[in-house]
Length: 250
Image (cartoon, rainbow, N blue to C red):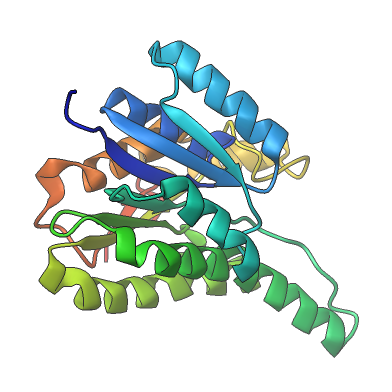
Protein backbone atom coordinates (compact mmCIF):
# COMPACT_ATOMS: atom_id res chain seq x y z
CA UNK A 1 0.00 0.00 0.00
CA UNK A 2 1.31 3.45 -0.92
CA UNK A 3 1.88 6.30 1.48
CA UNK A 4 -1.35 7.94 2.64
CA UNK A 5 -2.06 11.29 1.08
CA UNK A 6 -2.00 14.50 3.05
CA UNK A 7 -5.40 15.66 4.31
CA UNK A 8 -6.82 19.18 4.25
CA UNK A 9 -10.12 20.49 5.63
CA UNK A 10 -11.56 23.52 3.81
CA UNK A 11 -14.61 25.32 5.19
CA UNK A 12 -16.86 27.19 2.80
CA UNK A 13 -15.50 24.80 0.20
CA UNK A 14 -18.49 24.54 -2.13
CA UNK A 15 -18.09 27.71 -4.20
CA UNK A 16 -15.78 30.60 -5.02
CA UNK A 17 -12.51 30.84 -3.16
CA UNK A 18 -13.12 27.73 -1.07
CA UNK A 19 -13.80 25.54 -4.09
CA UNK A 20 -10.73 26.95 -5.84
CA UNK A 21 -8.61 26.19 -2.79
CA UNK A 22 -9.96 22.64 -2.66
CA UNK A 23 -9.24 22.12 -6.36
CA UNK A 24 -5.70 23.45 -5.97
CA UNK A 25 -4.95 21.29 -2.97
CA UNK A 26 -6.14 18.19 -4.83
CA UNK A 27 -3.70 19.14 -7.59
CA UNK A 28 -1.00 19.36 -4.90
CA UNK A 29 -1.72 15.80 -3.80
CA UNK A 30 -4.06 16.35 -0.86
CA UNK A 31 -7.27 14.60 -0.03
CA UNK A 32 -9.74 17.34 0.89
CA UNK A 33 -12.79 17.50 3.12
CA UNK A 34 -15.00 20.42 2.09
CA UNK A 35 -17.41 21.73 4.71
CA UNK A 36 -20.41 24.04 4.41
CA UNK A 37 -24.08 24.40 5.16
CA UNK A 38 -25.42 23.48 1.70
CA UNK A 39 -24.99 19.78 1.14
CA UNK A 40 -26.11 19.84 -2.48
CA UNK A 41 -23.61 22.56 -3.38
CA UNK A 42 -20.81 20.71 -1.60
CA UNK A 43 -21.66 17.42 -3.28
CA UNK A 44 -21.66 19.09 -6.70
CA UNK A 45 -18.28 20.73 -6.04
CA UNK A 46 -16.79 17.45 -4.82
CA UNK A 47 -17.94 15.59 -7.91
CA UNK A 48 -16.64 18.30 -10.23
CA UNK A 49 -13.23 18.53 -8.59
CA UNK A 50 -12.78 14.76 -8.56
CA UNK A 51 -13.73 14.58 -12.24
CA UNK A 52 -11.42 17.45 -13.21
CA UNK A 53 -8.52 15.96 -11.26
CA UNK A 54 -9.20 12.43 -12.45
CA UNK A 55 -9.06 11.12 -8.90
CA UNK A 56 -12.18 9.52 -7.45
CA UNK A 57 -12.63 10.05 -3.74
CA UNK A 58 -10.20 12.96 -3.55
CA UNK A 59 -12.87 15.24 -2.08
CA UNK A 60 -15.34 14.41 0.67
CA UNK A 61 -18.30 16.71 1.39
CA UNK A 62 -19.53 17.28 4.94
CA UNK A 63 -22.63 19.42 5.48
CA UNK A 64 -22.44 21.28 8.80
CA UNK A 65 -23.24 24.69 10.25
CA UNK A 66 -19.93 25.56 11.88
CA UNK A 67 -21.52 28.14 14.18
CA UNK A 68 -23.20 25.21 15.97
CA UNK A 69 -20.80 23.27 18.21
CA UNK A 70 -23.07 20.24 17.95
CA UNK A 71 -22.53 20.02 14.18
CA UNK A 72 -18.75 20.44 14.13
CA UNK A 73 -18.39 16.85 15.28
CA UNK A 74 -19.45 15.70 11.82
CA UNK A 75 -16.14 17.03 10.50
CA UNK A 76 -14.17 15.27 13.24
CA UNK A 77 -16.00 12.05 12.36
CA UNK A 78 -15.09 12.46 8.69
CA UNK A 79 -11.42 12.92 9.61
CA UNK A 80 -11.49 9.75 11.69
CA UNK A 81 -8.05 8.54 12.75
CA UNK A 82 -6.15 10.46 10.07
CA UNK A 83 -3.79 13.32 10.79
CA UNK A 84 -4.91 16.70 9.42
CA UNK A 85 -2.16 18.48 7.51
CA UNK A 86 -4.05 21.71 6.82
CA UNK A 87 -7.13 23.52 8.08
CA UNK A 88 -8.30 26.31 5.78
CA UNK A 89 -10.96 28.48 7.41
CA UNK A 90 -12.74 30.09 4.49
CA UNK A 91 -16.36 30.05 5.72
CA UNK A 92 -17.94 33.45 6.26
CA UNK A 93 -19.25 36.46 4.42
CA UNK A 94 -20.92 39.81 4.86
CA UNK A 95 -24.36 39.51 6.47
CA UNK A 96 -26.69 42.46 6.32
CA UNK A 97 -28.86 43.48 9.24
CA UNK A 98 -31.06 46.07 10.86
CA UNK A 99 -29.90 49.18 12.69
CA UNK A 100 -33.42 50.30 13.60
CA UNK A 101 -32.96 49.22 17.22
CA UNK A 102 -30.23 48.15 19.58
CA UNK A 103 -31.61 44.62 19.40
CA UNK A 104 -31.26 44.74 15.63
CA UNK A 105 -27.69 46.00 15.89
CA UNK A 106 -26.87 43.22 18.37
CA UNK A 107 -28.31 40.57 16.06
CA UNK A 108 -26.41 42.00 13.08
CA UNK A 109 -23.09 41.97 14.89
CA UNK A 110 -23.64 38.51 16.38
CA UNK A 111 -24.46 37.12 12.95
CA UNK A 112 -21.26 38.50 11.39
CA UNK A 113 -19.08 37.48 14.32
CA UNK A 114 -20.60 34.01 14.25
CA UNK A 115 -20.22 33.50 10.51
CA UNK A 116 -16.67 34.84 10.27
CA UNK A 117 -15.04 34.21 13.65
CA UNK A 118 -16.90 31.48 15.49
CA UNK A 119 -16.86 29.17 12.46
CA UNK A 120 -13.07 29.37 12.32
CA UNK A 121 -12.60 29.05 16.07
CA UNK A 122 -14.86 26.02 16.49
CA UNK A 123 -13.52 24.14 13.47
CA UNK A 124 -9.89 24.78 14.36
CA UNK A 125 -10.34 23.94 18.04
CA UNK A 126 -12.13 20.71 17.13
CA UNK A 127 -9.30 19.67 14.84
CA UNK A 128 -6.36 20.74 17.01
CA UNK A 129 -5.80 17.23 18.40
CA UNK A 130 -5.66 15.84 14.86
CA UNK A 131 -3.25 18.43 13.42
CA UNK A 132 -0.02 16.88 12.25
CA UNK A 133 2.87 17.47 14.62
CA UNK A 134 5.26 18.62 13.29
CA UNK A 135 4.16 20.21 10.04
CA UNK A 136 0.47 21.11 10.41
CA UNK A 137 -0.88 24.28 8.83
CA UNK A 138 -3.77 26.58 9.78
CA UNK A 139 -4.90 29.31 7.37
CA UNK A 140 -7.58 31.90 8.11
CA UNK A 141 -9.29 33.81 5.30
CA UNK A 142 -9.71 37.44 6.27
CA UNK A 143 -10.51 40.47 4.09
CA UNK A 144 -9.10 43.77 2.99
CA UNK A 145 -11.99 45.21 5.05
CA UNK A 146 -10.10 44.18 8.18
CA UNK A 147 -7.28 46.53 7.20
CA UNK A 148 -9.16 49.52 5.86
CA UNK A 149 -12.69 49.21 7.29
CA UNK A 150 -15.80 49.99 5.32
CA UNK A 151 -18.04 47.07 6.26
CA UNK A 152 -19.00 47.57 9.91
CA UNK A 153 -19.30 44.28 11.80
CA UNK A 154 -17.82 42.32 8.90
CA UNK A 155 -14.66 44.47 9.04
CA UNK A 156 -14.47 44.00 12.80
CA UNK A 157 -15.02 40.25 12.56
CA UNK A 158 -12.30 39.76 9.98
CA UNK A 159 -9.91 41.93 12.00
CA UNK A 160 -10.58 39.71 15.01
CA UNK A 161 -9.13 36.80 13.07
CA UNK A 162 -5.79 38.59 12.88
CA UNK A 163 -5.40 38.88 16.65
CA UNK A 164 -6.50 35.30 17.17
CA UNK A 165 -4.06 34.08 14.51
CA UNK A 166 -1.17 35.68 16.40
CA UNK A 167 -2.18 33.93 19.61
CA UNK A 168 -2.69 30.61 17.84
CA UNK A 169 0.68 30.90 16.07
CA UNK A 170 2.40 31.38 19.43
CA UNK A 171 0.48 28.47 20.95
CA UNK A 172 1.22 26.02 18.15
CA UNK A 173 4.68 27.15 17.15
CA UNK A 174 6.48 24.78 19.56
CA UNK A 175 4.73 21.91 17.73
CA UNK A 176 6.04 23.23 14.38
CA UNK A 177 2.48 24.11 13.29
CA UNK A 178 2.15 27.37 11.40
CA UNK A 179 -0.83 29.76 11.50
CA UNK A 180 -1.30 32.50 8.92
CA UNK A 181 -3.96 34.80 7.48
CA UNK A 182 -4.71 35.43 3.81
CA UNK A 183 -6.47 38.76 3.33
CA UNK A 184 -8.08 39.06 -0.11
CA UNK A 185 -8.99 42.29 -1.81
CA UNK A 186 -11.72 42.53 -4.42
CA UNK A 187 -12.31 39.08 -5.92
CA UNK A 188 -14.78 38.64 -8.76
CA UNK A 189 -16.45 35.34 -9.69
CA UNK A 190 -17.70 34.59 -6.18
CA UNK A 191 -21.05 34.74 -4.38
CA UNK A 192 -19.79 37.35 -1.90
CA UNK A 193 -21.61 40.37 -3.32
CA UNK A 194 -24.70 38.50 -4.50
CA UNK A 195 -26.78 40.97 -6.50
CA UNK A 196 -25.22 43.99 -4.76
CA UNK A 197 -22.37 44.47 -7.24
CA UNK A 198 -22.92 47.05 -9.99
CA UNK A 199 -20.76 47.77 -13.04
CA UNK A 200 -19.77 51.04 -11.36
CA UNK A 201 -18.81 49.26 -8.16
CA UNK A 202 -16.73 46.76 -10.10
CA UNK A 203 -14.94 49.50 -12.02
CA UNK A 204 -14.24 51.48 -8.86
CA UNK A 205 -12.69 48.48 -7.13
CA UNK A 206 -10.56 47.61 -10.15
CA UNK A 207 -9.37 51.21 -10.37
CA UNK A 208 -8.25 51.05 -6.73
CA UNK A 209 -5.72 48.31 -7.55
CA UNK A 210 -2.23 48.92 -8.87
CA UNK A 211 -2.48 46.12 -11.42
CA UNK A 212 -5.72 47.20 -13.07
CA UNK A 213 -7.78 44.05 -12.63
CA UNK A 214 -10.05 42.25 -10.22
CA UNK A 215 -8.80 39.22 -8.38
CA UNK A 216 -10.12 35.76 -9.14
CA UNK A 217 -10.48 32.81 -6.76
CA UNK A 218 -7.35 31.14 -8.11
CA UNK A 219 -5.29 34.17 -6.99
CA UNK A 220 -6.31 33.53 -3.41
CA UNK A 221 -5.98 29.77 -3.74
CA UNK A 222 -2.38 30.21 -4.88
CA UNK A 223 -1.52 32.04 -1.65
CA UNK A 224 -3.20 29.36 0.45
CA UNK A 225 -1.40 26.60 -1.46
CA UNK A 226 1.93 28.26 -0.70
CA UNK A 227 1.17 28.65 3.01
CA UNK A 228 0.11 25.02 3.45
CA UNK A 229 2.98 23.70 1.37
CA UNK A 230 6.44 22.56 2.40
CA UNK A 231 8.11 25.84 1.39
CA UNK A 232 6.29 27.89 4.05
CA UNK A 233 7.46 26.14 7.19
CA UNK A 234 9.24 29.30 8.39
CA UNK A 235 6.23 31.57 7.80
CA UNK A 236 3.85 31.93 10.73
CA UNK A 237 1.86 34.65 12.44
CA UNK A 238 1.62 36.65 9.22
CA UNK A 239 -1.15 38.44 7.31
CA UNK A 240 -0.66 38.04 3.57
CA UNK A 241 -2.57 40.64 1.56
CA UNK A 242 -3.65 39.48 -1.90
CA UNK A 243 -5.33 42.60 -3.18
CA UNK A 244 -3.64 43.89 -6.32
CA UNK A 245 -2.00 46.65 -4.31
CA UNK A 246 -5.24 48.35 -3.26
CA UNK A 247 -3.92 48.28 0.32
CA UNK A 248 -0.16 48.32 0.68
CA UNK A 249 1.75 46.17 3.14
CA UNK A 250 2.03 47.48 6.66
